[in-house]
Length: 190
Image 1 (cartoon, one colour):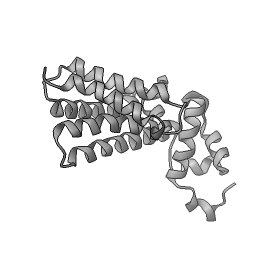
Image 2 (image 1 turned 180 degrees about the horizontal axis):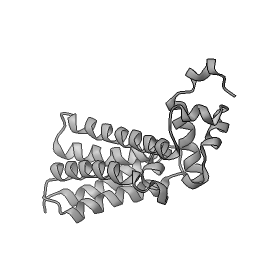
Image 3 (image 1 turned 45 degrees about the vertical axis):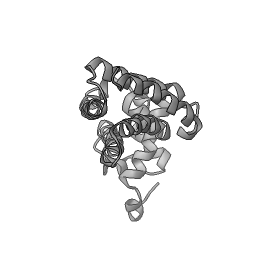
Image 4 (image 1 turned 135 degrees about the horizontal axis):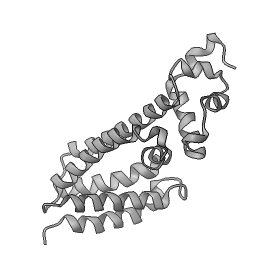
């Protein structure tokens, strides 16, 4: 157990990293603050110093992950590239994020538990709106909401197909590039 002197070593990041892995492995309902503490080898009271409950910890993870995805989108949008190249990088970047940060992606998009559903409404909606806006803005033709949603679902399907079956994006980079090229055809003027 961690004593008071070592309390500063127990950071939010340490807790969040351990919690992320446990949540993905066991599911939200099957993970307790005590289990997280046992994994870290500290008292569960020490975790409550940083998070008042499991829902707050989960919310912190979700927020952190969506901010990371948004930053990756912002980086692409700030590049001085042509519109079509930015769109390609945006779509490919989504796949790369999902496959390089698999446990993050699972928490963001795949954990469905009644207790945390309200945490999964605001951040995903805001990030999806930004993603949709960028896709529509960078597309050669005017896309319908359904077309933008179909592009998102296609990217999501690609990521979830490979989750836990590969170590990272590099393993399927060629196939991901092909997939994005197919999606790019939807965005071009006829």
